[in-house]
Amino acid sequence: MARKKENERVTYRELRNTPGRVWERLAADQPLTLMAEGEAKAILIPVADGDVAGAYEAYERGRALMALRSIQDDARRRGRDRMSLADINKAINNVRRERHAAERD
Image (tube, rainbow, N blue to C red; front, side, top):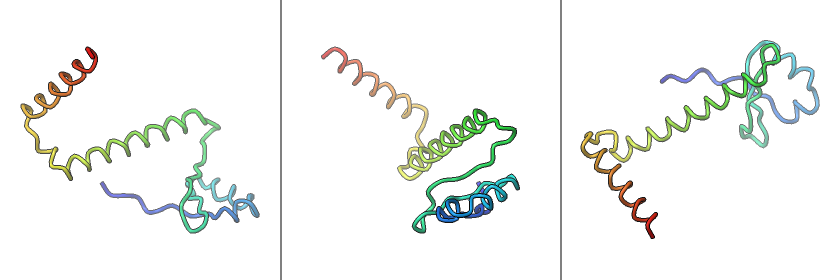
């Protein structure tokens, strides 16, 4: 999956000293990366029509997609993406058996 061009950066100092300029940049409906000490610390995103709940939901979905991608990458690194259905079912049954045994103890 191709990544989009990195968004514009804004420093913490710029946000503190000239917030009006930052608001103007956000008004262009483009996210800004908040930088502090040379590292990206946060992403500032414009919220359309004041829909904070919708923006936060999109953020949560994005985090979930990033977690899924990480899990998939890990599976590929470990060769688990090539497991057969029989191997998958065997692994599931082993975990269920272990959990059931632990519940009895």
